[in-house]
Image (cartoon, rainbow over all chains, first blue to last red; front, side):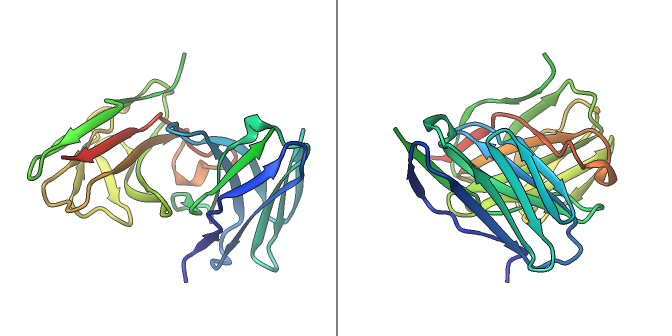
Length: 110
Length: 117
């Protein structure tokens, strides 16, 4: 079993939809969680970060962590065509490099 | 502007040839990383360095080599021993060592696409 599992999609939604992106993980030592957004042929950029369990909101984006289920989510409200990108979850325990999911490719159709 | 510069953007390698990918940062970051990205595979760690003149192998180091002679620079050489080098290579840096990754994470470069011809 891979340390981090993420459905690669592709996921296609109409403009204005609520998008849910998810990752599961197996390493219970992970306690720091991040979401990166990567546009085509570009490097990823940090979108959201959370520590341990709970929710964090930033504008149209909400990151959620459920450590008991080893499950993290990123919600995008009122999705826009400019949100079309690949979304990568990343996590780490505190003393190793980040471990990334495979990324989910999202298309928001106008 | 501070950032990470990867060059070249596109690189073509002949069979049996070594090639070097450049990565330079002016963020004064201590740690630097190389990842390989293949379709459907996500980001896989090749090498990382937390300090000048020191580096560690990642999950897929075979066929690759690195050096860290200056804080700003972390070049990656893809050797002829790497049998399937065609991929998108990403360089990243972080402010401190591995204990300080949160909350800033990595800053990534724009990548180098390497193709074997």
